[in-house]
Amino acid sequence: MSLAQQRLRARYGDDAHTPEAACTALIEQLLDHRSVRAYLPDAVSEEMLAAIIAAAQSAASSSNLQAWSVVAVREAATRAALAECAGDQAHMREAPLQLVWLADLARLARLGAQTGRPVEALDYTEMLLVGVIDAALAAQNAAAAAESLGLGTVYIGGLRNQPETVASLLDLPPGVIAVFGMCVGHPDPTRAAALKPRPPQSVVLHREKYSLSAQDEGITSYNTTMAEFYAAQQMKVRGTWAEHSAKRIAGPHTLSGRDRLVDALHERGFKLK
Ligand SMILES: Cc1cc2nc3c(=O)[nH]c(=O)nc-3n(C[C@H](O)[C@H](O)[C@H](O)COP(=O)(O)O)c2cc1C
Image 1 (cartoon, rainbow, N blue to C red):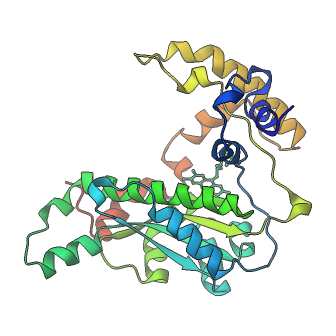
Image 2 (image 1 turned 180 degrees about the vertical axis):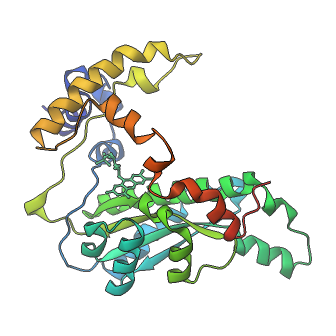
């Protein structure tokens, strides 16, 4: 079995259906993604960081506004403080590099001021979305680039638990907010991460029209696949993937403090009109 076939099998089980003829080295690399939460102490070199950021900057950007920035944090004390903001995630202390991806409207506001123009559109929710989407596209390019260099990554949405503290740790001006962090480092081979299965394509791929009910069969099958995965990984997950996911959205108390995100955004200078 080829490497690509092995990875498709790990993603989809026996239902692997993407024809190998459509596989490239890039697709093979993307299929191998896994979040890494165990790192060696070795630093990520400046050369690697520069290559990762070049890949990030090569992503598309809405109207080429470049409404994102990233803060590279190597200082152990700052990484530890960021880890506390994110619910004390141990891998954030362990990974030698934390990349904090930002929706950045401050640069555009400054351009407006410098060119003597109003910047009222920045007050609209649409512009926050532009910044968040730009940051996410850049970050995902960075993650794929890092993985292609043999590094591991894991996104850290936990940074949205305490946006104001993150902003003060990183000196973020008004109009800038951390969308998520990203641990980057050399994976510890003695604690290797497993490749996590995905739902069958019938769950996410709709043809011509969207259908909710057409997803039921695929979700039942994914519940079984994930039960096998949790058992193989000795993960103590209660209930099926569907139950686990439903529990995660039960109420504001399940959002780890992010139920007050609108307040934090207002405080950060986003008017959300
Ligand atoms: C935006 C975003 C935020 C995430 N936040 C966290 C986090 O705070 N901590 C963590 O350990 N993993 C986090 N993850 C990783 C997901 O749990 C992971 O991607 C998912 O379980 C799928 O596993 P895989 O990446 O290994 O395929 C995040 C992923 C994304 C995309």
